Length: 304
Ligand code: CP
Ligand code: NVA
Image 1 (cartoon, helix red, strand yellow):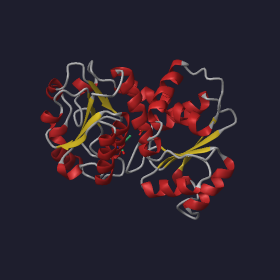
Image 2 (cartoon, rainbow, N blue to C red):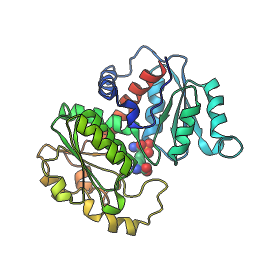
Image 3 (cartoon, rainbow, N blue to C red):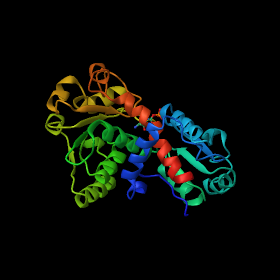
Image 4 (cartoon, rainbow, N blue to C red):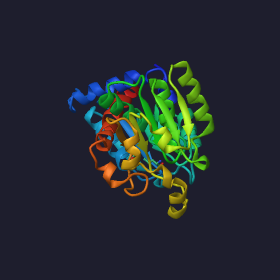
């Protein structure tokens, strides 16, 4: 079987619904999976900090019977005295899969193109595909499905927003990217996602009007106003994003059973108020847990 990368949500275009269902099935097995990945090693390389991605991939490969290998990118030869291409070829001789967290998606692509083993993105500046998969798992669990549902993403049109655009389009869910004009999602991804949505009978649109956008929403979603590697000062970010905060007034506009999501880490008082983040409609910690189950679905599918 040809090796498969997951670097963009588009790499799950043909089987995202199956991956969501597999994650839910694996979750029900509560860690007792019969070691399907026995003898497999997953290298997990990080250029940036991580709590959820690192721990959930580590536990996921371990509970599937495999072995995690954590590597700080700055301690490797790559980027100092060895090319990405050579690193990809060497690593392909040692391990069975690479999970990589990068500043620059171009490094991710070069790794993915040259490794003869699967390369899985643990986030880059363009996308966060495994987060989006876990988010679809959470929405399926909480809402039962995607058709006729509406997700409103508020704030920075960043990597998480870009991946959600693709994920909603693929799963058949309406999505509004409600972002300031100066921080819209990637234009090409927005266009591609809208095309996929058109083919799939749902709608992807942009808005700059939070109160209008959130009417009848089933899911409100936000992320940090300042992503890793973004040097925007906090005072500037507050000015740009102030009106896009998820707070109880905005939540009242959505459906009464609307859920609130955040990929975490969260900044209470900035993109979301403490009242909402810690309130009854927030599902953020279930969402974080689902990273583990989604990661298992990805590893089981790619490394088995
Ligand atoms: N949501 C997420 O990817 O969190 P980490 O940065 O902690 O991995
Ligand atoms: N957009 C955030 C996500 C962190 C999980 C970042 O890139 O820092």
